Length: 494
Image (cartoon, rainbow, N blue to C red):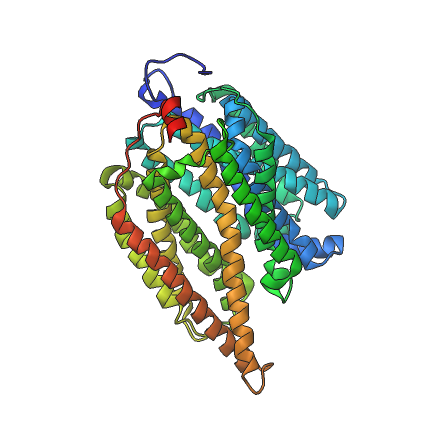
């Protein structure tokens, strides 16, 4: 095992001579600014359209392309984690991210800006699986809840404050400072990691299966692209480009999955799904990510439409919920260590489902405080379910499956987000259009308002039934324990 020092302890946090705080700090600083950058550019899209004289479908590629590249590189992360040391991979990843940030900051054209953005996505996509894997190797299962809660703070809080922070930066400094201000912190993270980060992972250099990489790239890349492109045409899912991309992506994912079970050293070992609590965590994770991403998009649209609020006001109404989620994540993680998942998940999922039902009753006259409180309840429920579920699922994995489990979870985030947003927004638009077809004056403000209210009610009722699945799942969860390592002979027989 390639480590900075030999130790008799199974987990480094149990070794009193090893200081784990600097390792955590190095990883979390890098993750915070990489994930902050994920949503930092959203507010600046209109500014970029004027700056480079481009249309909305073109400028949206800074977001779509970012998610697309993440979906391609994350499945490859288990291979990289077995080929490179912790230090090499983290410092290399942050260096790639910093280079992409610098290119975007000085970009003279939109094409160069997009190239820089896609290079950033390579670094961001590889970063989270690396961080999750390191924490699993450092901390024993009974201490992981608190640690993963801190990671949850970064994952949720950084993207949440991105739009608010970027609005201030764009107004007072200009869009290029969205990248310029990130560079010093990225460089600090690299220097800090160079001094304090030690190697905790095992370098085995497994055989590279290029066919798996090809199937993965086509499968996840085409699927994310297809779902992300649904809103670019009135035809939605029936748009030829969208339909073909989703079909090709689905075939690619199926071929990738079949391939993983046939080879001795899979790129992403899907045997993790044989472990019940890991599969349970994946189901919870997918539903929560889909509903959360959809709400973060539908609520601003509703507030700026029927409720007639300014964009800045709509964003501020959602900010308390996002901040609460970030603040509560470490506490929820520590609570998970003490009481386990079921005590937390049962009330949290019930509150989540009840809030989704409440949002199905939104009207133009709904007081803004209802949105604030409702979104806070959503984000509080998410902090009590998503990261505890993920931690519980990863706790059941044997060590050799850590890189594969973290890669599966990390791959599902952009994939679930893209699917959730595209499906629910498509349903929203379809219901709105069908309502307007049946009214005498479909262009009147009253008709448009009523159509949006009916559409939002319809979508949130569907989301409500999705969240009822998480309620059922919360009743069958149990505290996971690591399974024993399988011998090569057992693996082959299974």
